[in-house]
Image 1 (cartoon, rainbow, N blue to C red):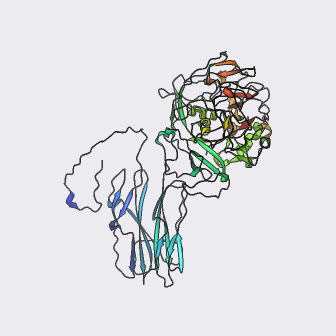
Image 2 (cartoon, rainbow, N blue to C red):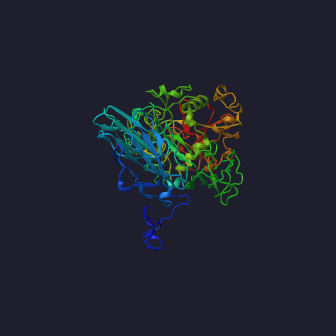
Image 3 (cartoon, rainbow, N blue to C red):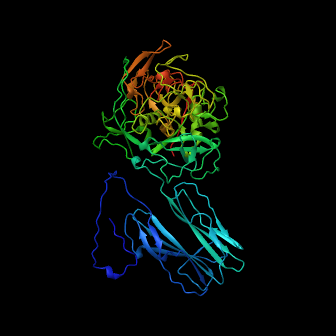
Length: 640
């Protein structure tokens, strides 16, 4: 509790006793890392912010009346005062010691304090000195504007009656937290000046306490958005609560087709201006629920998947901490980990990041207006679109898919999704921060992104649409009998969150290649073509962070998993016959297909196919040669 005393209070208060009574209505338990941390607020004495004088008038600085802060109490000796002078002839300000009323000009007196956390509070008084009546100048818009970091800002200017010369001095950098002063000056034909100022506070962006530092990373290319229930996209102000993992609302951003295109805060962003959508996966540790040490199959049995316990934060788990273990991150190894230990998910270690952005949909091919037109085996990064209701880019080998992803947004370290990164999304989906249920299959056989089956499939893979595994081909943006498009609210069940904020197409649609391969392959890299693009891909350490390496040689070698990749931990594994009379390997989690990479099929593919039925799902994993396939796509990840 703090007792505020006027900054100019006299000595008569010395020796006085003050008392107060505090009534507590409720108690809220906050995490240890929670700290109120706001900018100090200064109030000018007598509220006078703009003083107009004539040459040779007397001037006495009034200073500030009070300073409010959430951390400490300031006195007048803590205030740093600076005076800048503008003489009316150029756009430069001079730092001076005092207001000199013997000469005309504008003086800007800045009063500033800094609290123990480095937050700066300031207020500015404008003093003009003229020979005659000053010209009229009036701000357009608010005198004080508060924005979040990287929010949109557009200067609104001023209104003036006489304008022989005018100046604007000051730059607002919304990327940098702080207080900015924009000075507007008008000079009339007689040399008299007038000035007004606008104060722009750039505050820390909204940071959900739950994430404990694993906050969304924004860049110039990544525009924060909110998505309404009808699919309308609006630019979000980072000062507002634009995401809430506590409420299963994950953070979303878009990349615009034109870098210079600007949208104001809360303005609707046109779909035709959007190139790609991405969703933030915050760094977390999870409690080990199954060590995934399976090396064979048993009679098929379906179990009820547990809710995975997740804790967000930036600190890596360690063997030296009770109840934790250091992440092994190596295929087949458990290190010192044991059941119920907390372990930092390996997807967050390779890039040493606060988290990563995942393509909200399977990657599409710009301009494709038919299913066939999106089958391109070339690394054309300029054709990448990640949107709903577009044709998924397929028939591309791993090498070209990786190069297209890698070249897409280099400043954000774009790359093709890794197997462990897929696992990180899957585990977050099955925590209390996701939908915690089987992700509904995209059963549109035209390979269009964002679709969802109207009913949960009850049967596995089938070469023809049957009761219990219905699918159909529907054009972009249209609904069918058994499948509905992204803008239909019924499609939300195909999202990792059960609402519009989640990630789509991770069940069904096209299979998706991920960067996870086995060194047990008969040829290095299989048919991926990646060595012909990057000859040192498997030998140069600079590439290692972009793929997960396994050593398995058989499809049943589930114990070769990397803890956290959502493969071996989904056991036990069994075999079940599908409607096409083929017996397939499945995990006990939702009967999703489960086949490990082997010597002939060295690369992982995830999610299943539109006709996979109950086999398809976010925990579905399979193997392939990594050559082209008109039924296989890929997904992009950013780690700015």
